[in-house]
Image (cartoon, rainbow over all chains, first blue to last red; front, side):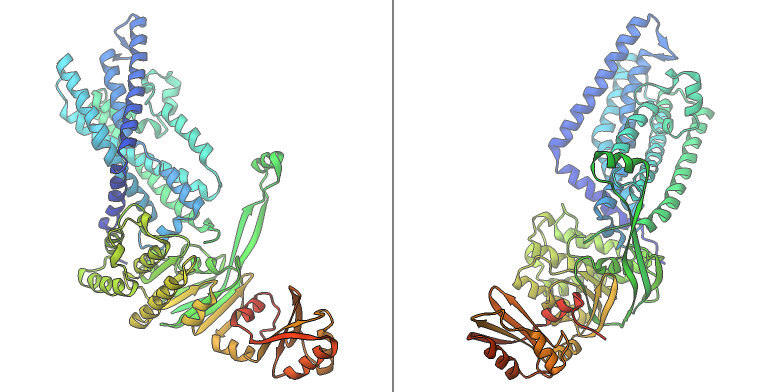
Length: 272
Length: 336
């Protein structure tokens, strides 16, 4: 049959983007909240460095740490999404029915809806922070922007987005089996915050923990793109990190599709 | 056009124990309760037919529709809509169908109505010429023009329903499923929506499956009705047949001194009548008698009443189709 074209899904991205534009106060509160967290984290690290008496910790200078913290925020703008909540909510409310009567793929609908939000955040929050970080590095430390690093960061962050999207999609499908996924969602958020490296660089973890995390998708979300930006992954190492990301996109993507085909048979919509 | 063959749909849900201890227990041990929503349902519908699919709440109407649209997968049995099994080829089937769920909307909540239509145009890949032609037809029939620029969230229920109906028709589907399309609408808007459905069916020869609790929808739109109760089909035939079969039913409403003096049993015994053919009840001190005019004369009944008590006032009615269908729901009449 005629496969629904990309054009069919664009309106979903446009829809989210437009409705976000109409809630401007929300946006400012969001930015203020984010910046507060980032600065708080920065000052904690500042204190850590001052008291440690050494210039670098696990190969991170204070300058690296500054970049790391702010770039984590940019990466978060790419990666964070609440696909699991969207899916679980639609299943619970039964509004998923309105998407199933259309000749389009459900996961693409969710993907594009979230893409609208991600593009919004990357445009209005992520990119300005990125420019500020590059500016600060150049003017106060004389570090010229590394274009290859920035390109690698974008590529890797997009991959991180896809990994987390499929992870969330699979997680959301659990709503077919469990009637309330809210609690699990909270737990998931906390674990991922920690394991993705967005609070503490993975390099600061004990060796055995790093070994375990190497087999998990979490450090592909935030840690990998930021390390590429910092130039800590270079050449073959960067390529290897990207390939690991590709692996996770494929694995989670395929699992998501298979699970969806199984879960949809369990769908129950009561009433209306 | 539509073939439904021996469909069964079971829902299983976790059995919940009452109270806090119960909730904790449910966390660790899961017991399932099974409910059969649709039970050995079969029927077929021809192209261009308008079929009323009716039954009391929880009878399994919506569940059947959701299986025909490919949203739910039947536990067993087979459905074909225009040669496609909807739940196996959901997207392909979706190109052929339009759906209105009266209690939900498929419009974009934050966007103007017009935007929803142009989005749907993309989704269904409708070409510009067809889109223009259909929009002008639908716009006229459903009177969309006054609120095309209004965001969906600010529409009245009647406007929303008309917009939803147009949204379901924009790709000229072969089958239109309408699940309670007149729910919550006032009399005038209801009439508008019915006229629109009629015209759509006439213009495009669209097959329409309609569920409703409002039997005047059925009387005006459907030649054929399927009645379902407890997931089983209890009637499949024309509305006219029901009317002719029960058309000889009359209802006597009597104001009498002592409404309890009259009993139906002696007359039933005397004339050999069943409970369907003669029954009585006392409502608010008024004696209501239902009788089959072909089986017992109205005069005999009145004579019997007069013999027992004093008559103050009386009126005679033809039994309404709604009353008959209510009786079918309650299994008070034998459909065989």
